[in-house]
Amino acid sequence: MIDFYIDTSKVCWGVIESYNDDTITILSSEWAPGIWAGVSDCWVSIKDPVTKATKDVFMVYSVDLEKRTLFVGAGIQNVGFGDLIYFKEKG
Image 1 (tube, one colour):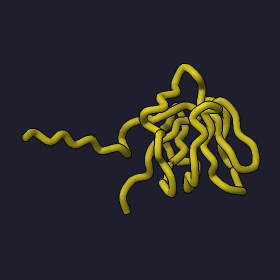
Image 2 (cartoon, rainbow, N blue to C red):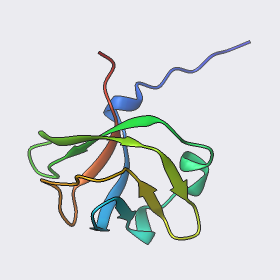
Image 3 (cartoon, one colour):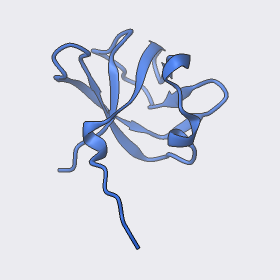
Image 4 (cartoon, rainbow, N blue to C red):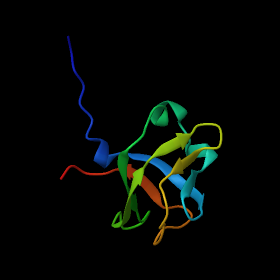
């Protein structure tokens, strides 16, 4: 059996289209429902598209596959259109 390992903290899993107080919507051109299906209680990092610097970190509590939204609870700040979504680095 061959196992493949991907460091998920190095792969962009979506681009922010919009956000409000508790949800982030991913651009339709970047949406891959198979990646997000079943995701809950998972940390994501929001990174600047140019510098790749981490702008914020959120817990994803649930995902709406039809609306392309991540429910992250209250307190979204420091993010904007075009920012990149990564699964959070270990540690």
